[in-house]
Amino acid sequence: MKTSIAGLGPKTEFAIVTGVAFGLFILNGARHLLFAYGRPAITASHLHGLIIFEVVTFSGLCWFLRKRNWTAERVGATASVSDVLVGVGVGVMAYVAFLATWMLAALSMPGAVASLSAPTLVGGRLDLLTVLLVSIVNPVFEETFLCGYVVTALAPGRSAATAVSVSVGIRVLCHLYQGPLAVGIVPVGLVFAWYYVRTLRLWPVVIAHAIFDFVALVGYT
Image (tube, rainbow, N blue to C red; front, side):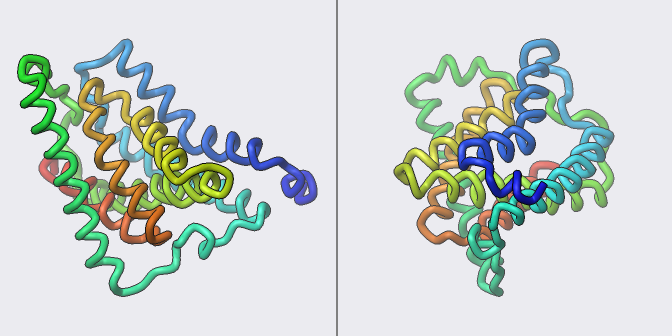
């Protein structure tokens, strides 16, 4: 098996990793958008399943990528004390980009933006432990593969802009359940991916994402 895994081509490897990591999210997001938009997409049971899925899938894909000679150093997953402060800064930049995008949209298309009613994304109350676990597991999972793997895998043979665009595109597809509001994922994804391209540091992006997730969910505890 080790020989067969090592013999896979880069395109096959990319398809396996992105398909396993994000295929189910994209399908479920599209299903919710088409058939259940307006209903809560996030519940306590959903988050429990998400944690289990991401832990199991993360472990399996890390095993697969180690067989393919990927290392933590290759994706910039070596940590330093400064990553926490830098991560907060990246989070602030991403939030500013998010607000700026919606302000520009409101100025250029006031009617369209005003007509968007935010769907009820969270149903019921969430316990604090679940929110804390999700705010750790989900950022590690998403950024390891959306930035650490996708950008690193594509950058050598393509431009940085292409690698960033693919990363952002997958990120938006994974959030289709938010409907038109998923557009707000674009500026956040751009900041995360461009920071990673410029620095090849993964942990600040993970920390910034963790802040976003925690702030978005803690109000429902």
